[in-house]
Length: 91
Image (tube, rainbow, N blue to C red; front, side, top):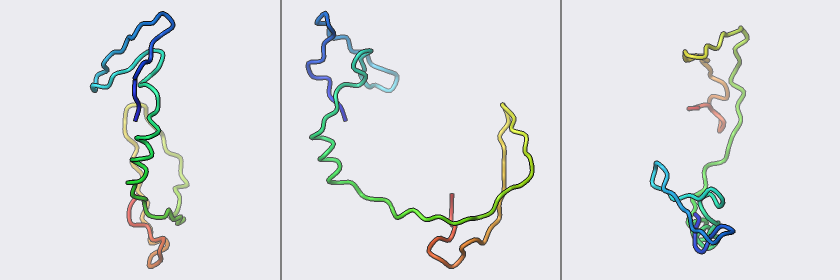
């Protein structure tokens, strides 16, 4: 969160422009100054994400051409860590 309160350039101008998604910005100040109070209020409501786990799932050992205009699809089937807390369910 940020605020643009009292942010003027060296000549006392207050030039703020609206971008394509409706946020105001300034070429000197970006989106304004950080609002520490608002950030603390948001942090008090923050829900943490689950712990991160690591499971070695396999590898692809053949060369793949990566095209600049085509998607690259890779498929790895694995049962790595199955039945454990680090079981791979999704990526």
